Image (cartoon, rainbow, N blue to C red; front, top):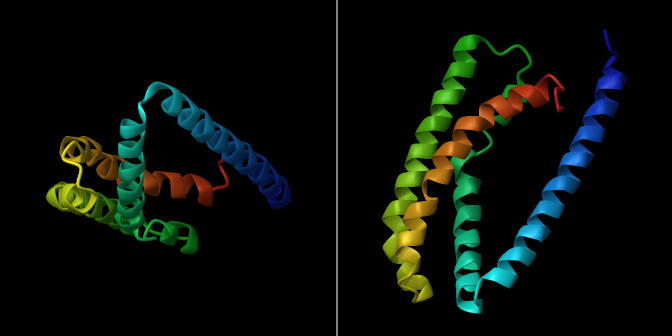
Length: 143
């Protein structure tokens, strides 16, 4: 059995490695997109990134963090958190779809309409996996 100190050190190593890998992947993705896309299309991606950031801020609302906060959560409580996240993912996905015309109007860019519709399911997918990610973090299972 490993000690809490060893688990914490291991967690820091995995978190640092993960953060570096994600940051490097974002820079590489941006460089590749900047080379492949014309400036207008790259601007569309920037506009969508703003929308994705806003949607992700509201899709979980920190509810999954309660899994870490409450150390002895029952199966019923974990199930409730999971289904609440599914519900919020569906709601945020619906709101993003409904807001597509507003996004087009705000940016004066009609090409955004279809793109917003295509990215909207990401909120449902990410909210589905969030409780599982928090359970792994709670158990310090970063690898």
